[in-house]
Image 1 (tube, rainbow, N blue to C red):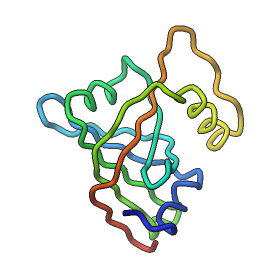
Image 2 (image 1 turned 90 degrees about the vertical axis):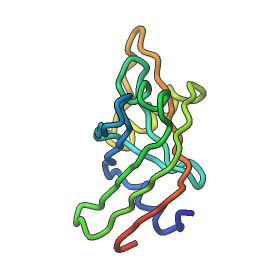
Image 3 (image 1 turned 180 degrees about the vertical axis):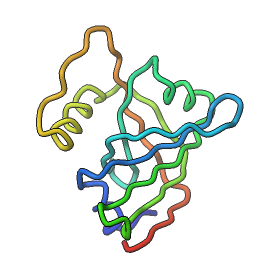
Length: 126
């Protein structure tokens, strides 16, 4: 379980690094916008990208978020769930959080919300 103090880190516009597993088992990491989703962590991506394909093959993921001073961080490992429900609203909310403006609609793009249920949490400073 994430503590409230650890979850607070996900409320800030701090970037996350998400690691998924390729079909050959090798890790693939990317920078993402993150937010809390109850006691879980969530980010957004689009079908056709590597992350959803990796998660469909193996739902194990890890997310690391650090504060700007790097002495406050949280790493979450768990299983990811994919859904298109609320994905458009989420990417707009995240865009406003990180960029301060609405998300531009992209014709033909199918957004997906990724929810990571924590199985293991490591933290420093929080």
